[in-house]
View (cartoon, rainbow, N blue to C red):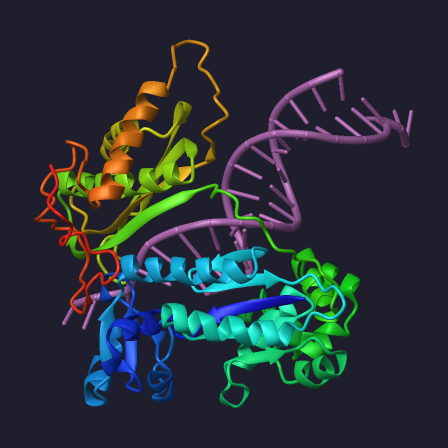
Amino acid sequence: MFALVDCNNFYVSCERVFNPLLINKPVVVLSNNDGCIIARSNEAKALNIPMGAPFHTYRDFINAHKVKVYSSNYPLYGDMSNRVMASLSEFNPNLEVYSIDEAFLKFDQNGNTNIDHDILRIKDSILKWTGIPVSIGIGPTKTLAKIANTLAKKNNYHGIFDLSSKIKQDEILKDVNVENIWGISRRWGSKLRMIGIGNALQLRDSSPRRIRQYLSVVVERIVYELRGVVCLDINEILPKKNIMCSRSFANTISDKSILRQSVIEYAIRACEKMRNQNTRAQSVYIFLKTNKFNKGRQHNEGIVLGLSTPCSDTAQILRLVTTAVDAIYKSGYLYQKAGIMLLDLIPATTNQGDFFQNTNSSASDKRMHIIDSLNKKFGPGTISNGSLRSRNNKEWSGKRHYLSPRYTTQWDELPHVM
DNA sequence: TCTGGGGTCCTAGGACCC
DNA sequence: TCTGGGGTCCTAGGACCC
């Protein structure tokens, strides 16, 4: 059996843990740069505020209904997520962290284990230990557990729904629209409707082979999963193959050196993430974009630069940033976003040498390790690269007008050091 | 005025190998 | 008229997810 544990309105719940006055009030959380509405409390959902709506189109409505607004606070949400996941793993180490607010658990059934009893205990403990309410769906496959989870969220089920019985599946699946099945979005949903498949029961009972020919092997697997045949197992957590860091700016930027500074900052962050999962990049992609919503002249360009040997050294990556920005920047454009992607990451332990030069990376590894540990211990940015200037007056950092404190990861109050 | 930021997997086609 | 039969690797593009 699989269980999908999903934190309810996760970002809103994180804010509520540290500000109980928000409980029972309509609350929304915005994306980076205060752009879109990406999390809503049940009260906000009841006001029909849609997911992903641009904030500015709802500002008046939100004021009129006294909806509380928060900028996204990823240090807080990330830390709370770690707490939830660590708590879950105490109950069942066989877990897959699927996203910041979701995890699959796999239960081996040996005779008389009572999953429902365990699940109730998990749900209550997570709330008690972390303050985060969760909903849990149970099913014989991940796809069915996902469907069970959406039912668990409905009021009359109190946060737990068990879809393991065949009878229940028959009864429930006919009321699940195809495009609400995990892995089927609007495009495939409308294609399925064109051949008379509108709900999960109809998809389950269709011919897997026909579905494969009509759409793809991905959807064929969903057919089997709906039948209770496991095609998608728990994935062990593998290192990311690509790591991206990019942001929209608060205001457009046309100055090359400021653009370069923004990419340098993103590159430093991306390199930290890369080393944190113990990998090295083989190439990098750097891009600049103008605002696609504006009528003005557009320039979107990116460049891939290869590294002669796999690299996890920030300084070396930063040299590529300068080269890349020089290559793709065009004066006279109002850039709105920039970013970097570290590509083809491989484990740091596989040490591919360069035939033509000495590539002993141990000195660099030691240096990076010391920098990372200092930043971990004393707070982000304690040690940074000299090429990153004006850390305090960042013309590019996005808007965050409604930011809550970093309740769980604040560094300012640490005992004096150095 | 304002419109997020990450990821994964699959397929088809081309280039290459013997 | 006929012009082999296997393979692998890489990339771009298109889907999907949260």
